[in-house]
Image (cartoon, rainbow, N blue to C red; front, side):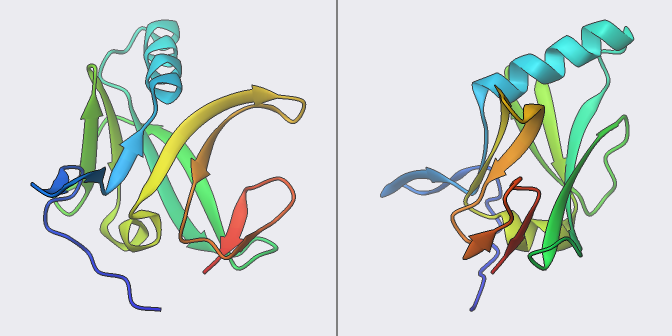
Amino acid sequence: MEVVIDANFGMALGSSSAETMLEFSDSAVRKLKSLQAEEGNPELMLRVSVYGGGCSGFQYTFSLDEEVKPTDKTVQKDGATLIIDQKSYQYLAGSEVDFQEGLEGAMFVVNNPNATSTCGCGASFSI
């Protein structure tokens, strides 16, 4: 599978397309802002990364971070920032980072249209 990384990360792909390269859902923005308030730190940003491992080949990790590295990509929405490292971005292009609450608990999740399969909990995937 060929993955094309567009230089317009987080922006519209062109005048003929309203689709963005990575979405940051309203629910995820609200949760990040809640965490910022809880920690008393409005500088906190949500970092999502992809690593090899997990039961399906790759796994998502989420962390709070205060620093954007020079090679990181960012998505900003309503005063909240999502950070993605350059290597992880190739696996996340076209995805949505969301926050869900359900029977499995409350967690950030990635709705990834590139994933060909996922594990039962949704924490790992394959392409």
